[in-house]
Image (cartoon, rainbow, N blue to C red; front, side, top):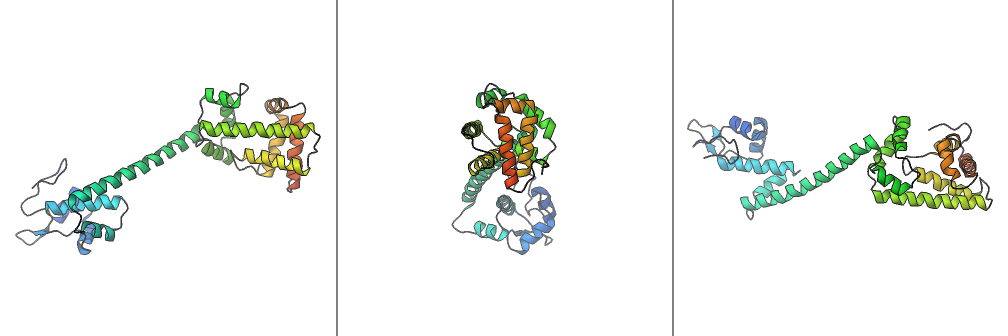
Length: 273
C-alpha cells in the first residue's frame, strides 16, 4: 500500500510505526500518542512483534485531522466530525476544500490589507501624481508629500497619516477635497461678514477645521495652534490660504488661536503635543 501524495513512502503489510508516521506527516510522536490516548487517531494494526502501527487509512485520517486543525477546529470537534456516520471520506474532502477556499479568501484580503499598510508606511498616499493634481487642483505639487515625509517622517503623527492615507481610495480623497473646499468657503463667508475670532459660530468652524486635520492624524488643540502659526510663517501655506480670500491666512490663525484658548491652550506657547 502507498500513502497518497508526492514523495510518499511505501507502507508495508503491517503499516508504519509511530516514529515513521510522525516523520511522514510532520507531527511529533508525542502528538500522535496524545491523539491515540484521546481516541482521535488510533493505530489500527500490529506487527508480528506486537508493535502498534498505522495503516494507510489511519494516515489518511491523520491528514484529515491536520486540515481541520489548520482550519481552527478543536480536537474534540474534529473527532465528532470524522466519526459522523453520515459523512464519508469524500464528504470530508468536499467540506475541507470549501473551508480552505474560504480561509484562502480571508487570507488574501488580509494580505491585501498588509500590502496597503506597507505601501502607506512608505509613501503615505496611494494616489498617482496625476490623481493628486486632478483631485487637489492645478496648484497642488505632488512633491509636497515627499517634503512632508522628510520633515515629519519620524513623528507619531506622520505614522498615523501614513496608515490612514494608505487605506484611502481616490474617491475617499475626492470627498476630503470637497470637505476642504466647503469648509474654506464657509470660513471665507464668516470672514467677509465680519464674524470675530472667538465667537461661537467661528469656534464651531475652527473645530471643523481641526476635525478635517484629524482625518490624517489626531490633531489636539495645541497641535492646531502650532498649525495656525505655520500657516502664517510658511510662505507656501500663506499663499494657499491667501488664494481663498485676502487677509484670510492671518484671520484663520486668529480663529484657531481663539478656539485653542477657549479649550485651555495658550496659543502663543503651544507645543506639538
